[in-house]
Figure 1 (tube, rainbow, N blue to C red):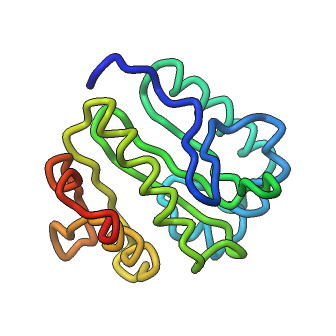
Figure 2 (figure 1 turned 45 degrees about the horizontal axis):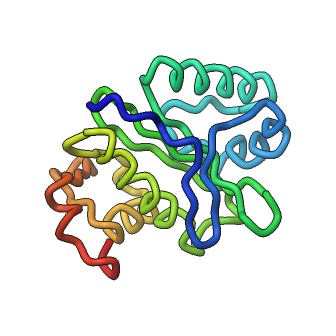
Figure 3 (figure 1 turned 90 degrees about the vertical axis):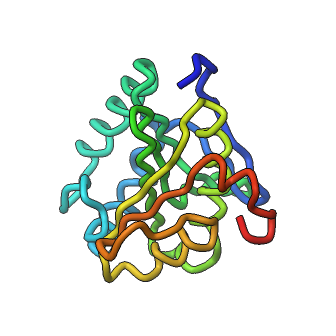
Length: 172
């Protein structure tokens, strides 16, 4: 991985992805704390309360300072409303993401991934990977939409930097 600085923000057409802040806790906790969101996430406790949110913001800041991970909150540009989060573990390229229920099914997941993928590859990661629950069809669709390929029947997906370079904007 290169010593390039971690991005402070990534912008898409509708979203700004930026580091989590303590003042965001009251707005993102209800989204990730909902069972229909949390149940798909391997590392998120349920119930998820304000203490969990504050602990996460502190951990994300520490991981950023140590260059262990890039964890970003996605907020809508028009009103600053958080819609979800996305992160990349910089040691191995594992990607994880979530969207609050009101923001699912409108393309925000693919939009977040499309912003993070080139940033992760610019940091020198040779590949990104994600593992999803086998019956998480929405997440499967998001990964496949942006160009990740399934590696096995266990819902393990991968996207290499080489493959990413050859995907067209319509397929990535």
